Length: 338
Ligand SMILES: O=P(O)(O)OC[C@H]1O[C@](O)(COP(=O)(O)O)[C@@H](O)[C@@H]1O
Ligand SMILES: [Mg+2]
Ligand SMILES: [Mg+2]
Image (cartoon, rainbow, N blue to C red):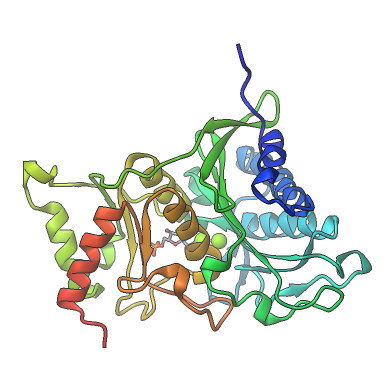
């Protein structure tokens, strides 16, 4: 009987997808794998360790930083700084990007953007949270310090992206542009094992995820789409079911496996939505598209948006292709893009 493939073996095996691979990207993914295990251990015993609650300060987004936000941020920064694989890093929890300028970094080819802890509002109540990462080849020449331009690249330039969901089990899901694969952490071995090979997102589903508490502030097109989801029509399996965990990674992961749509629209409370283009929307959009889904801002392909700020926000419609297309129909009908 063949044994499951470990993530480490899979990463090496998949290096053949890149004829000129130097192995640096593989090592970088391995650093992310290690950091996620360290964070996972802390999350699993969060109630016992003094790691719940906030640190009593806000990040650049004006959000209260939770102790686990800061802890996860440090663990990933240290893991990615460690081996000279990354020229620099940008994070939700840091105002500006960090240029690693020690000698070992000068020839590194990559930069990384991360949301170290996604779903912060769920940390203290034992609801699944995650980490999201996005990897680009730097534009600036090796031997020089990374610049902001290395981070403000459109999403279709990503060389790899993924997330870790710390839930009933811990999973790491990633793509390098050759399909999407998922690995489950076997806690007894401390090893990620291939559990979800070549994931395909169902083209349609019966789940919609949106914070309906903001309903009155939604654009008309979104209100109409929610009504469409709630109407009764057996032929199209409506009404759909509403599911909203409040952790983007967890809502996305469920929809990736079962089919569904997640929407965080612009609204009167968030003129450009809430979610951050660079380290939330782009990486999950890359995964969604690689699995046959779609990701837009209601009008445009997320991966084609030219970023102009590290922490810029965009409206987000992501999930099963048919459902995102339908939502866009309503947006174009009721909220013509000016
Ligand atoms: O509480 P709201 O406004 O519905 O927002 C929930 C959304 O905000 C987020 O928590 C934002 O991410 P962070 O926790 O990383 O800041 C998403 O995970 C989630 O989908
Ligand atoms: Mg987040
Ligand atoms: Mg976060």
